[in-house]
Length: 261
Image (cartoon, rainbow, N blue to C red; front, side, top):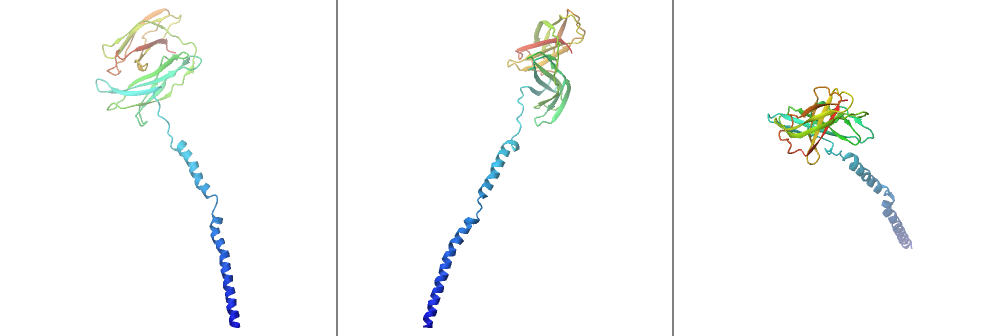
């Protein structure tokens, strides 16, 4: 009897242990889902969303190179092998009054942006720009370089100021020809039709190619004052221009005569 009771108790204990083990099994399988953080996916996505725009705008975007439409320079060799730099800077008066251009500085740089040489007190032709009128700062300077090299131009200063009372003189009998010394020669006469004497008179011509891009600027200051209602002859040429530049490349030109302000 005791043996039967012991066997029965052992069976009951075995059944109880089996029941406990089956009740704990769901807890063990559900624990991973309870401990998994619901924010983990969003934490990994947020860095990619914030870093991508930064990389596409501020970090990787670089400024565009200048187009070269408003200012440019290049070098060339003369017949003696000396290397020269020629620079242009375009100025358009888009204000509602005439402007007086101030001298500027040309900085000639190589393709990396390193400065090679500078030219100060570069003037714009014409000096006073009427409303809607375009002029050009222009300079030629010997570089001292050993060979022709691509150039970039940086312009400093030359901020225009409002100006009233700009005077233009008339030009007559103007002709364009090849200079006997090489290059382009423009000659003619200037008339002072104002009642005042022009103490310091500049005559300048902007020469354009067939695409209306300036080839050069020729200028001179008359050797004497120009009295009221008087005329004087002028001759414009520059011996430092590229040797190959001649009238065959010149499609048209503008000429200006005025007392220097």
